[in-house]
Image (tube, rainbow, N blue to C red):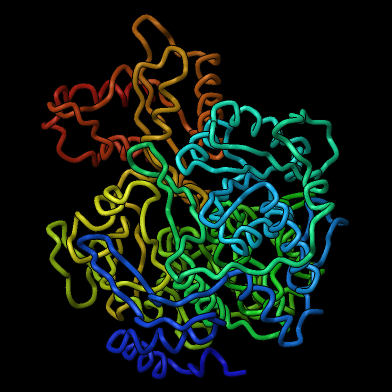
Length: 634
């Protein structure tokens, strides 16, 4: 097999990259041939960033589930391992060959069809990292249903809102979940609470994961094992137009209402497949492990669709990196002889903090490549990752991308791109990043900083916000017409390397997950006694960024433990425990301009303890409030 698509030097990367920009359609025509199409496209792409209209491989017909399963079996590889599932407890793991996985996917696809799920219907998947989640994803793709995976830590209210937004017909969940020391996560109970207010849900399918007793509604609920008990193990894949929806995945919005990012079938699968092979230097027989959750885009693209379309062996992990101890990641690498390991800087910081004793007694010689995702990796953990985990023998791919992009946009090519700790380095093929001023002018040359945008479309790009195309245009294209605006800032150093500097809008990146400030502020505001709240991010040693809330109480109330805990409970109920503030400061008021806008810039400085560099505060309606806030913290 060719190494990295025959890109074995920086010079070859530059030549191929130039071709991918200058002859974009020819480049992607060639890459799309890596998949099996029922019908070839008659036009490669059509894109209009002003109208937010994007299409790829127009007229082509394809099925994602077929490309991830059937074609490998037809080529004689059915007995190869498709998924290794590592459970929460170290002695609990299972493997699925491509033959076995196709059988289970087909059975569940037929079970969905028996419940009258048709092409275009939406199906919500609310589970922990169990094998049935991946099976359900591929089953939906097989029959043309649009899956919407909701992260298993989200609250019932968050689940309800996502179901109602996309009007899902069926909800798939599990009895209870286990994750680390948490042995009784109330998945079905949360689902029940959500379904009380989701009129579109006709059926709830429940996986028996733990055997804990749960309430089952005789009219609406059905056990997974019963749903598949009398169905055929063969299910013909639905022929899908390249631009038919594949999935909706919700990500935080600056307005407080989550955005249903919609990806379509053909372009997304081409991009996920190609980036997975090139960025991770995947070769047949490798054991590949991405530690992400399927509730996030990383799990979609680089646990399921990318790896399986490449006939990879992909590892799914139900647990957490510190259970039963801080050596769990490395124990799994040793146990399964993992070759490519892809994780978040947050996890690395937490593990690095515990020292090297958890690593030193594990055999990590199988590792050939290390990757990071979710946020920029800082130099200390990059060096630790390279030296202690990779033994100075593994390239590190620091990847930058988003839910909206479908796949990796800026990244090193392993063993080709000279890396710099903390830099995502250079754009992937077909990706043309630019830095813009606040006025939308391109900033040329090197050693510059600006707002990161992308010129021209790529196959993995999202197509719309489900049910709200105007919002899609407003969020991504209206600020800088002719560009896709990422919402991130970046700098380009003297050598042309890209360094991502973080969000420039009202989105916080906490432990690699985007959380909208408006959503958290709204949840805090529902706690008893809260008059107003403002949320900002601050630098955190482990999470990268953490949430700091400034809260003003109703007149006459004094802060106490009860109010503090009610705020945390409200955020947990409304969003989930991952969005709880790490710091809550009760303040007499909030710094506002005369027009009533909260000056979060000032609150960010205060949250970092940088009281001396607050900038100009004369535009505030009451400049003295800043002194009052600082005094209240001391």
